[in-house]
Length: 416
Length: 91
Image (tube, rainbow over all chains, first blue to last red; front, side, top):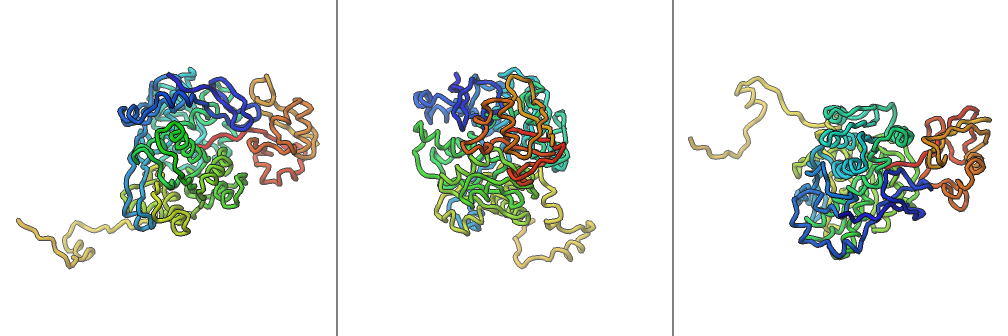
């Protein structure tokens, strides 16, 4: 049974029946309205906890009419303690929500696409499409293949090779646009109505975005049914951080968790920082930018949910901060070397920004903090190309090895 | 000075896809006034009380966001191709 009541404009409040729709008549975005009283009557911790470990354990909070028919094994990624990274950042209780191992395409986008593809099937679409900075393209391509749908993915023509190949392998049709993501986005919004496709982030946007909430439900459940005091989230279009705040709010409203303050902290690359600049200025109205950063998954200069993201951060008492490309690579290395997790450039952004927040006192050492690792470093290898110690190459001769790697003073006893 | 304007379906009510219209206007304010003449009531839905375009509508001139060209201060050039589109989600 569905708890969806319909769609509502986030600005003027006009309501619509559930259908594929790009925006309200006033051109503002739409959001899904749920039967909150129904949730209160039926949803319990025990009911959720008894279900299989994937994002559909929260399906009542997601905008499907029925049970999911595909993309069933997505989400419930590990929430791991990060004591070694925490010591360096100066945080006594640090956690990592590791969506870099999400299934099947190693980013948090598997969550939003799982909802969008199921919704596309409910609406009867035979073709799905997306405008993407890479991770969304990978997810749409993979989920569509598994569901037997045709997929068109629109991407900037300068994307990381792994993200291009990682879409093509699934048989998706790639359309590479000469321009940045904002240009891709512009084209897609012009064609979304004309082709009869389910465009996951255009005419399915209201539903798609809701998939992000599952990350927050999981964090709260994995912490033992409570919110962290601070959560650091990378921002591109600004949807994820907005939905995390919404999801924590929903859980508190229906009594699944106690309502306690939590700070939403947003992270961007300095080369594409419209939202953090707006937050620092204290006004959620952002100015668009022309992106120039190695964090290409975050390179959206005119973020559609930027206003809501900035507002959510400010209302939560949080903060926004951005970091340079060198700091991003430093963040990737720090995460990998301390916790054994290879996150993509966006993870480098999150870790490096978190480091700044602790230094600035925007997060205190005693505040329990979650960092959201939203994508996988094996997809953005070019970011670390030439920046790592790749070791030595020698002939297979003992003396060459011993010359290159002197024995340390300590000897491990060996018995034969 | 005539410019070409592409209008989203949601404004060009009842038509499929975007609508192309030519108009002779000097700037963004003139464009919005002209749209109101063509589609009565449209300003009420896409502008705020002061007549400023909603933050959810992006205007592009020859593929460049008008905000990079000076926004409301930008003077249209002969033959400019102008695009009005709602901002859409990230990816």
